[in-house]
Image 1: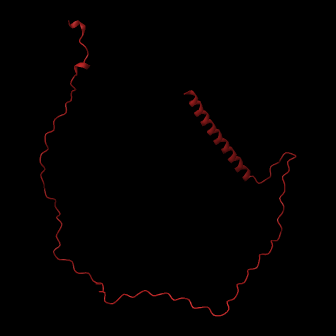
Image 2: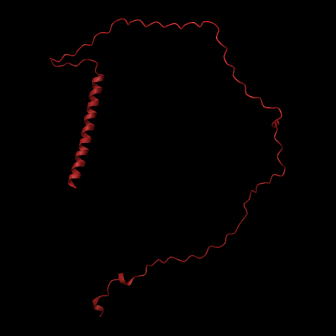
Image 3: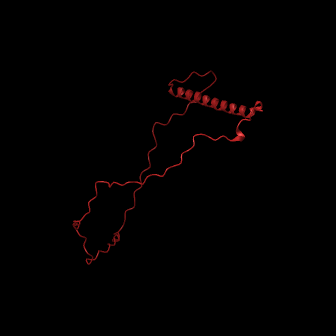
Length: 143
């Protein structure tokens, strides 16, 4: 039991240590990015210089010209037309038929109903009967 406790303490310690060190590294990196001056390096460390880019870029290649089409082009194919509906179909009615006159009305009052009486429920006893086995033994002076 003690070894598992030690392992969990060590694991939590390592997680905390890694978290803190990564926070310090990120803060140091942010600090280096925000500084504009080159830091003073100890003697003997030389920073290599990068070569300067050339002042002019080479010219872009020319765009090739497409060959011209000789002669006439064949005509484009025609789009087939959809078949037209025949005129023997009935036309839809533009007006709706009138509503019937005998629409029933919705009653606004709820009829009164009487419910049958509920049956008598037996009452739940409020005292717990004593069980002789669990009752204390009689006192020895009762002889």
